[in-house]
Image 1 (tube, rainbow, N blue to C red):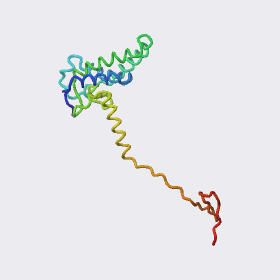
Image 2: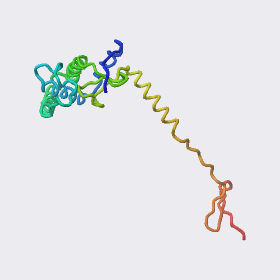
Image 3: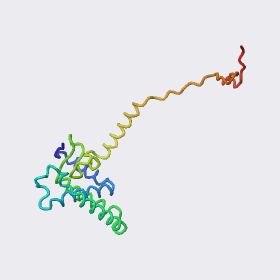
Image 4: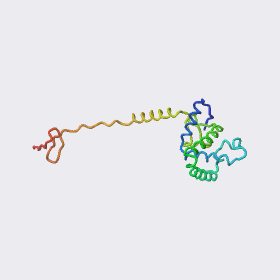
Length: 177
């Protein structure tokens, strides 16, 4: 189940910034998922009768072909256009499609970046600082749950065969019967 967007302007700005922080590889995958989804219904993809069932509109052949071609083009253009050119271009395309779909998780925590709501293809509406603080709080909570290590006291005497070693005096003592 999913919700429609209904957030503040600040939340949309955060989501777009979080999208632009995604890796080029992830953006390529998301962009190709959109292509595979949209190219399957070229007439009017948004008002399709099967719009409610996005998986039925996914064309695996289009996806794999587009992904191979896009990755090749990105590698070829990297030196000429710069490292971030394709990241920005793909993120801008994806953001415009995301705004059209305007779908997020239950509770409105994360926006869907792809038409299928894949868990790896979502971005938070929270700012980077809020996400880092939430991660820090989670780490602290997990640390509190861990059992504390208690340092064992060293015993003064240690038995070694028929002798006893006294750590305080650093001498061996003979046991008497």
